[in-house]
Image (cartoon, rainbow, N blue to C red; front, side):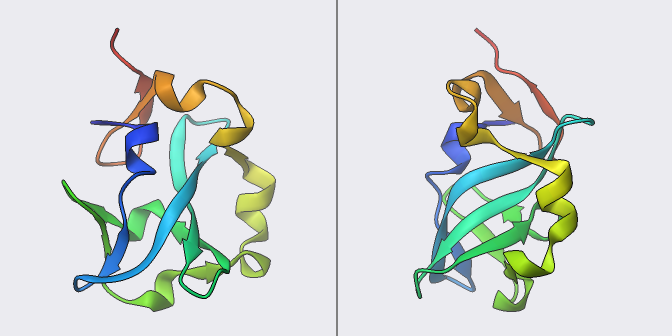
Length: 108
Protein backbone atom coordinates (compact mmCIF):
# COMPACT_ATOMS: atom_id res chain seq x y z
CA UNK A 1 0.00 0.00 0.00
CA UNK A 2 1.22 3.48 -0.84
CA UNK A 3 -0.10 6.91 0.04
CA UNK A 4 -1.78 8.55 -2.93
CA UNK A 5 0.43 11.62 -2.63
CA UNK A 6 3.54 9.40 -2.77
CA UNK A 7 2.42 7.86 -6.06
CA UNK A 8 2.49 11.32 -7.62
CA UNK A 9 6.22 11.65 -6.89
CA UNK A 10 7.15 8.63 -9.04
CA UNK A 11 8.25 9.01 -12.66
CA UNK A 12 6.43 7.10 -15.40
CA UNK A 13 8.90 5.02 -17.40
CA UNK A 14 8.93 2.58 -20.31
CA UNK A 15 11.87 0.15 -19.96
CA UNK A 16 13.74 2.74 -17.88
CA UNK A 17 13.03 5.65 -20.23
CA UNK A 18 11.27 8.60 -18.61
CA UNK A 19 8.03 9.44 -20.46
CA UNK A 20 6.25 11.63 -17.93
CA UNK A 21 5.10 12.17 -14.39
CA UNK A 22 1.74 11.74 -12.72
CA UNK A 23 0.14 15.01 -11.68
CA UNK A 24 -3.11 13.58 -10.32
CA UNK A 25 -4.81 10.36 -9.33
CA UNK A 26 -8.22 9.73 -10.86
CA UNK A 27 -10.55 7.64 -8.72
CA UNK A 28 -13.96 6.04 -9.13
CA UNK A 29 -16.11 8.03 -6.73
CA UNK A 30 -18.65 5.22 -6.31
CA UNK A 31 -16.34 2.26 -5.75
CA UNK A 32 -13.31 3.71 -3.89
CA UNK A 33 -10.88 2.52 -6.53
CA UNK A 34 -8.08 4.15 -8.50
CA UNK A 35 -8.97 4.39 -12.18
CA UNK A 36 -5.71 5.87 -13.36
CA UNK A 37 -3.34 8.79 -13.46
CA UNK A 38 -3.29 12.15 -15.20
CA UNK A 39 0.26 12.03 -16.62
CA UNK A 40 2.11 15.10 -17.84
CA UNK A 41 4.19 13.72 -20.71
CA UNK A 42 7.46 14.98 -22.15
CA UNK A 43 5.62 16.81 -24.95
CA UNK A 44 3.69 18.77 -22.27
CA UNK A 45 0.43 16.94 -23.08
CA UNK A 46 -1.73 15.46 -20.34
CA UNK A 47 -2.64 11.83 -20.97
CA UNK A 48 -4.62 9.23 -19.08
CA UNK A 49 -2.77 6.18 -17.77
CA UNK A 50 -5.15 3.41 -16.66
CA UNK A 51 -4.16 2.06 -13.25
CA UNK A 52 -4.71 -1.53 -14.43
CA UNK A 53 -1.87 -1.35 -16.98
CA UNK A 54 0.64 0.37 -14.71
CA UNK A 55 3.08 -1.45 -12.45
CA UNK A 56 3.86 0.60 -9.36
CA UNK A 57 7.46 -0.12 -8.33
CA UNK A 58 9.50 1.28 -5.46
CA UNK A 59 11.01 4.03 -7.61
CA UNK A 60 8.75 4.31 -10.68
CA UNK A 61 5.45 3.64 -12.34
CA UNK A 62 6.36 1.24 -15.11
CA UNK A 63 4.43 0.81 -18.33
CA UNK A 64 5.38 -1.58 -21.11
CA UNK A 65 4.47 0.67 -24.04
CA UNK A 66 3.68 4.37 -24.40
CA UNK A 67 0.57 3.32 -26.34
CA UNK A 68 -1.28 2.87 -23.03
CA UNK A 69 -1.06 6.64 -22.43
CA UNK A 70 -4.42 7.78 -23.81
CA UNK A 71 -5.55 11.18 -24.96
CA UNK A 72 -8.23 12.45 -22.59
CA UNK A 73 -10.54 12.90 -25.58
CA UNK A 74 -10.61 9.10 -25.91
CA UNK A 75 -11.62 8.39 -22.33
CA UNK A 76 -14.94 10.13 -21.76
CA UNK A 77 -16.02 7.36 -19.38
CA UNK A 78 -13.29 8.31 -16.93
CA UNK A 79 -14.21 11.98 -17.13
CA UNK A 80 -17.78 11.07 -16.19
CA UNK A 81 -17.02 8.43 -13.53
CA UNK A 82 -13.83 9.81 -12.05
CA UNK A 83 -12.80 12.36 -9.50
CA UNK A 84 -9.47 14.13 -9.71
CA UNK A 85 -7.94 13.80 -6.22
CA UNK A 86 -6.23 17.21 -6.26
CA UNK A 87 -9.67 18.80 -6.44
CA UNK A 88 -10.21 17.55 -2.88
CA UNK A 89 -7.77 19.37 -0.61
CA UNK A 90 -6.02 17.04 1.76
CA UNK A 91 -7.41 13.83 0.23
CA UNK A 92 -4.04 12.71 -1.14
CA UNK A 93 -2.51 12.71 2.33
CA UNK A 94 -5.38 10.75 3.83
CA UNK A 95 -5.68 7.91 1.31
CA UNK A 96 -3.61 4.81 0.57
CA UNK A 97 -3.81 2.77 -2.62
CA UNK A 98 -3.17 -0.97 -2.71
CA UNK A 99 -1.66 -2.91 -5.62
CA UNK A 100 -5.11 -3.56 -7.11
CA UNK A 101 -6.13 0.10 -6.92
CA UNK A 102 -8.45 -0.16 -3.91
CA UNK A 103 -8.48 2.97 -1.75
CA UNK A 104 -8.47 2.99 2.04
CA UNK A 105 -8.00 5.62 4.73
CA UNK A 106 -4.33 6.16 5.52
CA UNK A 107 -3.20 4.86 8.92
CA UNK A 108 -2.55 7.56 11.46
